[in-house]
Amino acid sequence: KFHEGVDEIGAKSTRPLMFFIPGLTGDRVRLYVANIMNEAYDRGFDVVMINHRGVGGVEVTTPKLYSGFSHDDCADVIE
Image (cartoon, rainbow, N blue to C red; front, side, top):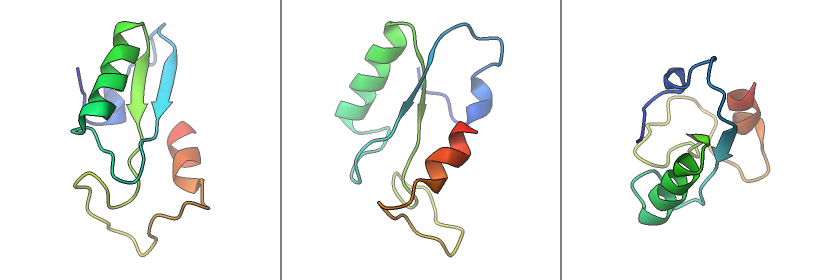
């Protein structure tokens, strides 16, 4: 059920959209993350998971690292 990249969720979808932000040790291969996302999908949501910078095998390509005090990354994805 996982799709890589936000372009997989079409603008024509009528399903509500859920943003999921796992903890620092969570990523899409963690069982609790996969279960929550699958359950949400089964209940009618399109789900977007936002990884923290450098988590889940995502290479850090900018000088900015993850900070729990900054919500910029989440705001960028939601916009």
